[in-house]
Image (cartoon, rainbow, N blue to C red):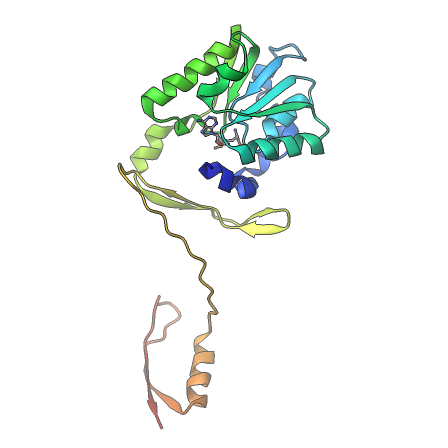
Length: 233
Ligand SMILES: C[S@@+](CC[C@H](N)C(=O)[O-])C[C@H]1O[C@@H](n2cnc3c(N)ncnc32)[C@H](O)[C@@H]1O
């Protein structure tokens, strides 16, 4: 089970509005696609939830979608079914591609949406790229998109919290990325805590109701915290 097997269930909250409709995701690669025959052999080798693969298949291309995560492959197959698109979805990590496909098979291989950094270091990256290259036909193209990691690392460790709720399927989410620039083990702990916030005026009434009278209060709407000292009457 990979981290993406868990994420697959909520992955649409991580995809931008623009990438969610398959046709639009595919259209973002129009500059490359216009160089290809309409029935080109295409491999999306980190297909995620399948929007690109399905978008390409809906244009008439012969599409294979692979991913290391079983759950992602399943979601891709489900999306293809929903759009009645013909996509062959296969679970395979990059190094396994030559086990599934002959050398020189595809006109284009896509590795997009910031995926390649999941390859383990320079050795893993080289092995992954070598596999992608092997299954490309001579003259075929690899299309790779990536974050500018130089910039990400220069900003250092931090939380990235989306500035708006992301609504998918009628449910809202706040997307938070923890960017941890560290070597060695990183432990993640997460727990859902329930909170029932109250206004100061409610608190005052409630204190009063139980026989406590405010002696001192530092409450100030402009301040982050306050203290109340209340005495029993
Ligand atoms: C950031 S997501 C991008 C998904 C999709 N391309 C998109 O743009 O939405 C990265 C994807 O790479 C896949 N992945 C990670 N490591 C992989 C590997 N070694 N081989 C193949 N896929 C891998 C993950 O399972 C995940 O679906």
